[in-house]
View 1: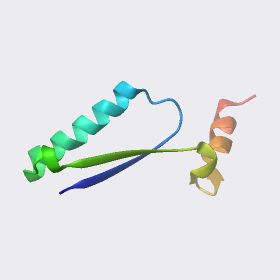
View 2: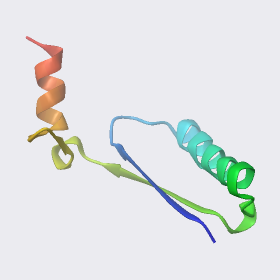
View 3: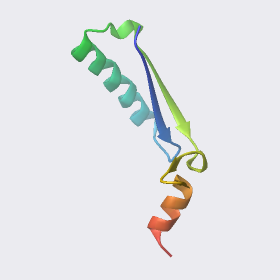
Length: 69
């Protein structure tokens, strides 16, 4: 039973987009590894941007800096 954990920042992914991620990951495992879609588990975790860091700073700070004044 494959288990896929997709982590994304909580920035407004819609229910439709998440459904497409779940379907796409399931399909990919079926096509590439021959896994049974009925037993494939896909979990999407949304992480607040304050709790996700790259290069020593949070995504919140990074987005703010990239947006400029």
